[in-house]
Length: 196
Image 1: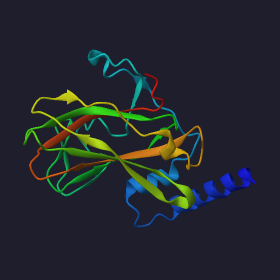
Image 2: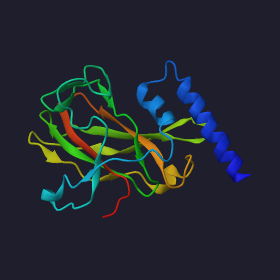
Image 3: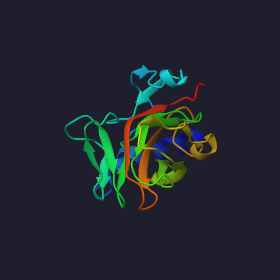
Image 4: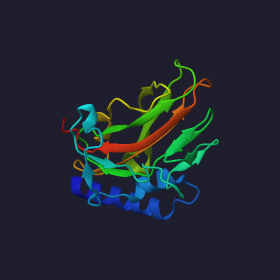
């Protein structure tokens, strides 16, 4: 029975991926990234900050010149290897493959606006019957100098309802939480297994 339910759910997700007309690209990619498709080179981008975990780059997370696979709204734009997030904007990454064991997000952030401003970070992941679940990972503070963010983890209980107990898809959305900040992010990485 459990196997039949998993097969039916995978078929539903595949059908949704093929018929995801009008669905934002980040959500459509959640449906199309099925278990077994995980493969990305690992590095230690935060070793200079005493974080020796191995991370994988979120797709398009370096924001180099040219197009980006991220979904940008409200004036969010890529410039000089960073993603600028003005008031009223959002930026949503494509889906990455991860495990259910506390996937951890980390990046470099800068805020040239008010010190009291916050950047909201959300995780999007597939739920049962093709739904996309959203949860807030936290709100970041930042200064006018580039600095690594704290590690932000999605707890295992958020992901227990996904297609696979060993692999799932996850995307991230960034939203300036108020009108006083001037946010930029760069080098967005995921530690799929939270090995630290």
